[in-house]
Length: 301
Image (tube, rainbow, N blue to C red):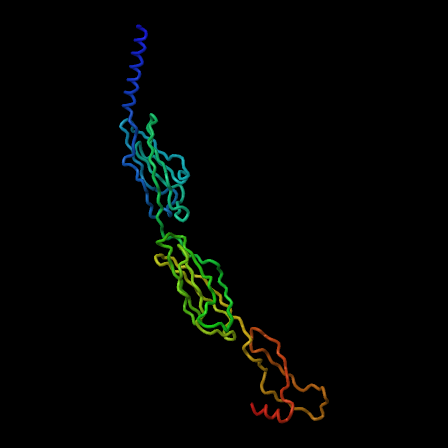
């Protein structure tokens, strides 16, 4: 019975001693606590090594605390540098780009004391947009063929489209066309977020014989953005058979000797197609066969 009393006394003493030690060693805590959400207005422009925010902690039992990031994919983009025993700074190791990812969830930081007490706190990064992307035209280069008899006020090209990779604040834009005599743009149409389109319309009748090519300046201009993108549009006018053949001279005069034999060379007649872009073959016919017909023909000149 004496032995059992000694064992009981030892067990009670051991439990009391353990509870006393545990009660004296308090876990550290973040002070102030970390925010649930961190907003970075220009975070997608952050350079490696830039300071993001501070980690501060307190511990009544320890003045030399350890800070860290619990394993996650985001931990590869962050680094922690200890400043003193109760504070550290969080820095960027690489760029955070909103166009790649807008929110980073469950980023877990911890603080630990020497006995091993560890406290975790989860936060979220929300990347706010900045104006860092210009509009980009799609389906370029723009090369357009149009016949010279195209009707005025009809659409000659309907595949003008551009997009802006920024967020809703900065991705709105509109199209303009530099001043010209023959073409204008339809109103800008919103396709979906960051994507807009328009159409090129004929303003005035074209004439192949006067001009065969037009180089237009097309602009995409941001509404709330400093960016402006300009591309060229090449419009090629196509010829149609709408002009008569043209003789090299008119009228032709020739003197014929009465002694000339049948089949002798009398006159060389040259004509070309009035449509310079098509160059159709010209066929020749003699329309005046009698003296009366010839006199009638000459009177027209």
